[in-house]
Amino acid sequence: MGKKEQYSSRGILRYEWMFGHGFLSYGGADITRKLASQVDWEPGFHVLDVGSGLGGAAFLLAEEHRARVLGVDLTPEIVEIAQTRKAENPGIPVSFQQGDIHAFDWEANTFDVIWSRETLLHVPRKDELFGKFYRWTRPGGCLIITDYARRNGKGSPAFEDYVRESGYPLVDLETYGRVISEAGFEPLHTQDRSDLLIAQLEKQIDYLKTHRNRFLEQFSENELAECRQRWQLKLDACRSGDMKWGWFLGRKEAGPSS
Ligand SMILES: C[S@@+](CC[C@H](N)C(=O)[O-])C[C@H]1O[C@@H](n2cnc3c(N)ncnc32)[C@H](O)[C@@H]1O
Image 1: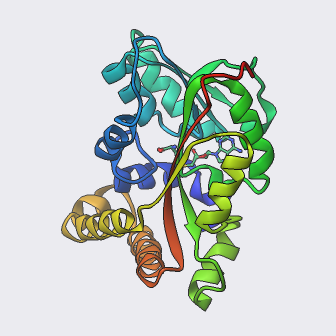
Image 2: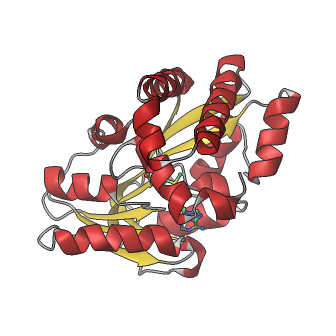
């Protein structure tokens, strides 16, 4: 599935069906809470969600941690859905802007937390972006990222085809972590959570199997086959070690002012 089709209106809803209401990434509210528990929240914390998708994380962080969340996302159809959901919940301090994260700029030290889930896999020049993230984070603030990564070395032909067709410029976990550190985030905690991704993929494949008929009320047989095939491919790639799930927690030291 190409990038255009991946985030077409139908593709978005199909992904949301797989991931759960508000999410286009793994683990829904549970994983969001687990990641959020790494932050010492204070009311009013300003969060930038890079690639905010349908806003699942933004709403949760605002409701459960009294954060003010700005979500930025490239895909107009996705942002439109997130903005509609915001309009239905006007009291929640979240907002969504459409655009490429590379085109935005904020003052130094603007955000307490920069958060990004399964988005930077789309970004080839991560070093420039992490430099900006560092500048935008206030001293003592943090960066939370989960993202796909790859094995260091060549993967199976099926995995290499998947990477090529998806156009994801994936890097290995060590390189990923090094780029974040070089931007200034220290200490950086890098975790290989491929075990958790395998569990999530197995759960989703199982759910699709048991809720097949419900899926077919909204989508076609072809779409079902495509979802199954794509999820199975990711599962195989994780099990073989070709694909990895990286969790990164970086902090900006309390000392520097930019
Ligand atoms: C897999 S989805 C994850 C969405 C969301 N983070 C979540 O957890 O549900 C990836 C998102 O990144 C967005 N995206 C991709 N490249 C981007 C860029 N350069 N700037 C902003 N958003 C981007 C896509 O539009 C998509 O919504």
